[in-house]
Amino acid sequence: MKEKVWDNPNKMHFESPHKTFNRQCSLITTGNQIGNVVASNYIRPFVEVECNGFVNPEGHLQEYDLSKSIVKLPQRIKEVVRFLTHDEGGIIYHFRHYSGNRRIDDGFVFTTKDHKLLRVWYVNRDWRAMGAVDEAIKYVTG
Image 1 (cartoon, rainbow, N blue to C red):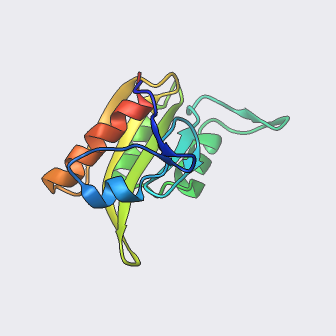
Image 2 (image 1 turned 90 degrees about the horizontal axis):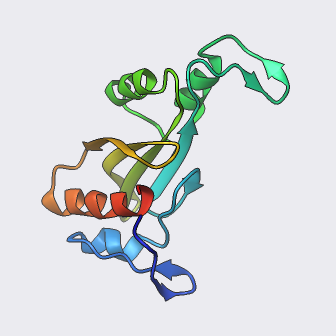
């Protein structure tokens, strides 16, 4: 995992071909987060049934994570994540930047809960955006 270097106490140094993404990035870290350029959420495995002392049917907690998450996944990505998290949970990361008030999705990254890279989906096919996602992966995998 790439070590963070700080430009100032409120902004980590981030360098990629995408200058807007770099400027907007204040922090990328592992686990659940809502940030300027990233939102991420842990997805529980299909077989996990207990939460807060209650027992739920298999798949209920996973479906909650996939549908009520801060990360809104396209259906095709949701299906892959559902398949990959049958027995073990993982973390989905959504990387994006903003142009004025408009959000521009750059990509999604899925890792195991111990931060091993499983899948990358480039949504914005611009080479700069792909470079930003590739650089961001270094901060969430190890």
